[in-house]
Image (tube, rainbow, N blue to C red; front, side, top):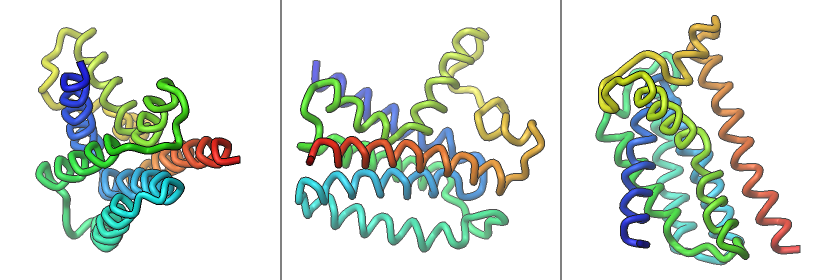
Length: 180
């Protein structure tokens, strides 16, 4: 059961980051917020391996984001977004001792990946209920909906950054509460 769960987790998160790579800077920014949350958990646990990987990957993504934010001059593409999703899904599988119960052990990684998981879940349900292929592209993602409300690309990305930051702050609060 844990092997199947691990495979589902890695495939879900890897593809979730590919799904949110629809606006300049969105997937890279979501990656940064997730890395901050994972790095914070690793620091609290004194898990230096995860801290070093998170800092190195975060530095690379931050340098990339400078050129990937709207108007972008470079892009992640499928390979880049899939790589980031894969790396993050693997980092989240490594043990964190902040969670005290099984529910917390599941909730913490889910919160860290809040926006990508939300996007993947909504996309799968929308396509399934609409009898559409789960693999066919569409223009009905969360970021497309924000654009259709009249937001610019930058504004839509910043709104989703705020949501990512909110999820990351919840992890920080849970971590601090657990330590006190």
